[in-house]
Every structure is written in C-alpha cells, then in structure tokens.
Length: 64
Image (cartoon, rainbow, N blue to C red; front, top):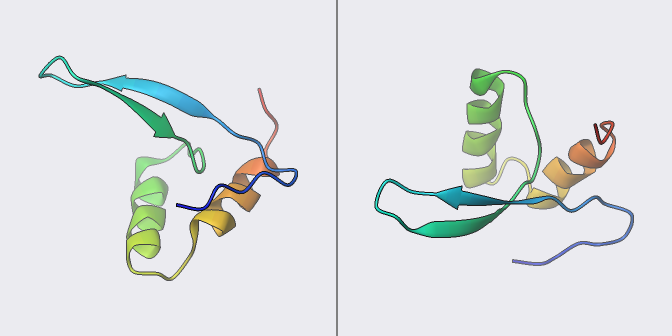
C-alpha cells in the first residue's frame, strides 16, 4: 500500500473484533449512507477507483 501524504488528511481508527483482537484501520473516506460506502468498496476492489481517488474526496470534506 502506497501512503500518500501530499496535502491529504490521514485518519486511523482502532477496531475491535468479537474475538478480542484489535486492528488499526486506515480511513479512506467517510459516508453518511452505507449503500454509498458499499458501492465505493466494490469499485475499489474491482479497480474502478483507487485509494488515492477516495483519499482526495475525503480530503475535500470538512474535518469535523
């Protein structure tokens, strides 16, 4: 995974699983609708958009 840091925000979170494990997750974008998030995930996995595309969109959003 290439880390892009030129003017893009970085956001991470700690995710806990039901099995007691913890993961550090990198946030590529945020959504108000789960269908929109799922659609972008499918596009990401099928190479229709890139992580950089999602990060650029995320960077344009207000931080809070």
